[in-house]
Amino acid sequence: MKDPLIYGMMAEFDNVNDAIIAARRTYAAGYRKLDAYSPFPVEELAEAIGFHKNGVALVCLIGGLLGCTAAFTLQWWINNVSYPINIGGRPLNSWPSFIIVTFEMTILFSGLSAVFGMLTLNGLPMPYHPVFNVPRFELASKDRFFLVIFASDKNYDGVRTRQFLEGLNPISVAEVPS
Image (cartoon, rainbow, N blue to C red; front, side):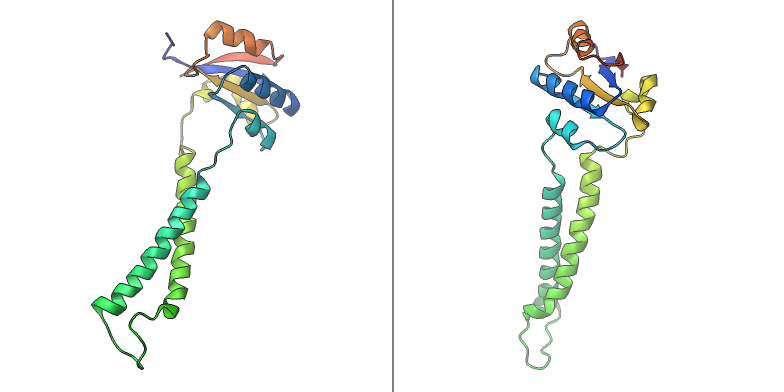
């Protein structure tokens, strides 16, 4: 049975190449619930831990489509149902005059949904995270790279996971308390 007071096991590396190799070996060993932390973005590290999906683009598309639909529908409703005024003999549903507002609302909704979607999908704001309980983790913003295997992973076992991480030649291995 898994210990609910343990968040996972963390290994510390001093260079990016060691961290990438360790992440690839960890993923190849069958661990799927893991995360990596680095002082700068490393695309290979994200790929090595199996992070391939990005839902922000879909959220942005849906927001843009909602904005487009809402703007066009609102203008159509106002001009055809609520206040139908015949000006200069033009038809009530004159869609070319709706293009500017529809475009602007599409951009507005798309941008706002991208921001709020990114925050939601990243779980932000997050004032507390269990990895902050490891004293050496403060080096993640300076010059160290960390790999964490979550205790919720199906292959996680405290002793075997520690031995596996120590076999990757890290600087240190630490248990991350919840």
